[in-house]
Amino acid sequence: MTKKRVVVFSGAGLSAESGIPTFRGSDGLWENHRIEDVASPDGWARDPKLVLNFYAMRFEKVQSVQPNAGHRSLADLQEKFDVINITQNIDNLLERAGCNNVWHLHGRIDYQKCERHYDIFGLRDSYFNCDFKSEISKPVQWGDKCPKCGAQLRPDVVWFGESVDMRRGYLEELIETASIFIGVGTSAQVYPAAGLLTLFEETEQKFFIDPNPAYEALLGFEVIKSTATAVLPELVQRLLQAE
Image 1 (tube, rainbow, N blue to C red):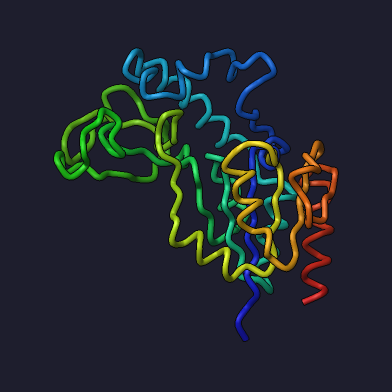
Image 2: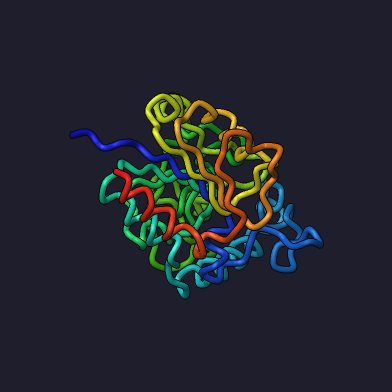
């Protein structure tokens, strides 16, 4: 029998409970750095060594923490459901928890790619034949070169001003086939989160988990005002028992 499909959209709040800092503080800084200095093509062009050092620290942080009960619960959901995780997070905690199908909108900290990949300097990949991406076991360093064209390697993370990995054909398929949608650890007020909530408005069952949900954007959702680790295990068991 074909399993029902569950689409889970997660944000920084899910991994924050494992000890990974959220994207920015109330002062607009990201771990004491201006966002434009460490998360934009302009910042990379100005000081690539600063950017690499910044992501090296984030890489080491991800390596030092473990998946939490929220991550593990989403892996448990695969027992009876076809689960597709769409995440804004650049860590690999969902994969390490055992989730099989994860779509990283903003890339992954444990992958590297050629700096010319995805038009970093306005140059097409095909021109340089350097469509290069690979998994890494240590942070990218200054002097690490693309094996295809010799350009500097960089973390496979989407910066401001770059295109998010929106697989539109695949997304349309998910919208049509999802029986359950779960939003967790993400704001319902900014894109792509707000857009995804709207796209899945016809999904039969919809849940949204966050300590500070924007209720006006969540009509038709069962809203649970809490953290992922506090309620996801219970919700997952509820769904498993009902199936």
